[in-house]
Length: 156
Image (tube, rainbow, N blue to C red; front, side, top):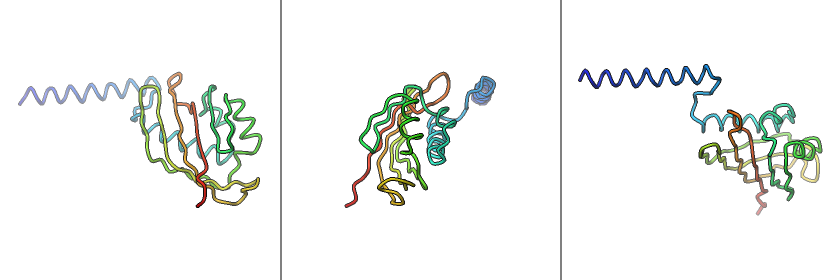
């Protein structure tokens, strides 16, 4: 019994030490799927607010977007110019419902549904439902949005 107690104490001490080292090194001790879920929501809010600085921080330089407007845009600067500065990302509301997250090494896959209400264009003021997949990649110790696909769900 003493041996089990000692092993349990050693295990908890090792886990605590590991968490302390992670915090000291600036690493987030939460599970990767929790971190990615939080970042995915942060990215949604940054898109809603058209917060270019936050999007630049959250997006990979190699970001690839297969967008609902049937365009594939490659590279963070091109996505920022075409979608953010160009007004494609300009919503009065933007909700995201995550249905699935999987972390596999340095990649995380987030899938689900979104509802957006554009401020301008032919769909201004209309609620648009779409499916999405976001692929996050761990780069230099942090997660960044690496690839994104979204498509509009046709109204029946």
